[in-house]
Length: 300
Image (spheres, rainbow, N blue to C red):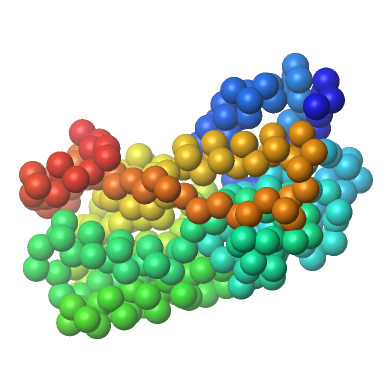
């Protein structure tokens, strides 16, 4: 491995509002320390397509040894740019469907990474929400139709809800300007709980999302741990820490000479349930002791 390698981390949203430190820590443990053995550039598209394209062009000109791409829009932008630089992706639910890799077992090309099924998680999140909020008969689902994976997750939630005779109210949120109206509509529809699927903009404004959920007294389950740390009620999904550790390990393998197209795309093995008990109390919600015992973390 060269003494000083260059790694570009491209996030389509706001990387500094995420637990990106997990990735830097994982890289450092593998001997890839920013400023010492590696030059690591952290770039965020901030939910802006034009900004994301400009960053991809910048990366292409800099020619790093490896790109770590976080979230589907970042990976798609890199694929469309037809760069030949090796790419490791993370938090990309459907890399085959997006045309990023040929298959999970044999990616081909210059992409590999860590994936998970966002659509399959939709039904599981609904199930956990119904367990936590007893007596729920109607659930609001907030989603962005243009964000990869959201439409499939909605269909999975609808199927799971139908099997349980639960009504689903769809709330489309295409931008920040839709957020307050979506919560108003959910409450007017008499939804008793909500599944909130964040895109880059919503994740970057997750504190506002949590504030609105509290104001409207709507218990919500979310896609990423920081949303619950910032007063959302619950999270269920793949471990952020494990995803970043595996992305770092794949990066190291490529820097040691392995071709990304020959490295199978990995799936997470660790899933976490996090409950914010302080939020539950603020909502006047009593969550059973048995449910809390199943949680990997309870925020008091």
